[in-house]
Image (cartoon, rainbow, N blue to C red; front, top):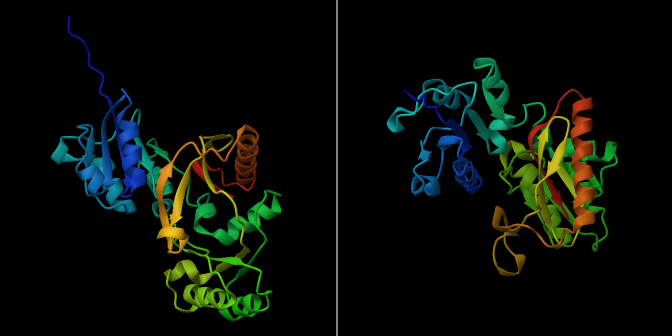
Length: 298
């Protein structure tokens, strides 16, 4: 009697950072997953010893990912994705903000894609929006002001007392690097100029957020969200600034480890509640958040 073999799932992981390599390794552990196609992938996925992980080099723009999903990846003998069991997981913020989830929903309506829509991705796309959203819904956040005019931003930072340290952020996407931590009044002025006048972070600096510097242990708290409920993962910590003594520029996050001991049970519950409120309020405004919600806690 012949046995019918069930095809294992194919998962496409969109992105090319360490995060996507980690996602690919974790997804490949599932007995239900046959192949993990990473697009574009990086040096880690290119040399992955796991035969399930396929480094495609395919660009992460909407059209390229659509083509990969529709046609499969012939060099690894992987056919088109099946809408019943296969999955696309989007790692980086940029494709989400570019609307990859919405794009694939139009092109291949039944395909399962894990990640927020373009409208829900505004939480990542605009720090200014997120700060206003948090303040509006009484979710704790550092005191702040936002600016679209560099002269107004410069006048504000010049008016601050010399001992009032602030953080200067490019509001848009800057791959985790658009946050400057000036130590003096002069450096604060220079930071605003770098973001808004010199445009070091491009269009991400069209709007600038100046917020009160918080000090203390930092934790990265990520929650799985289905548009209604947020479930927090164990908290992680990384080392954001380059060089010894935290004297360098912000990186996208290095040396991550988990769980972070600075978040105890009670704090964990408080943070999960903040994420839950965020998901509920995003749903109320008609932009339900589905995917992983990132909360940077201090």
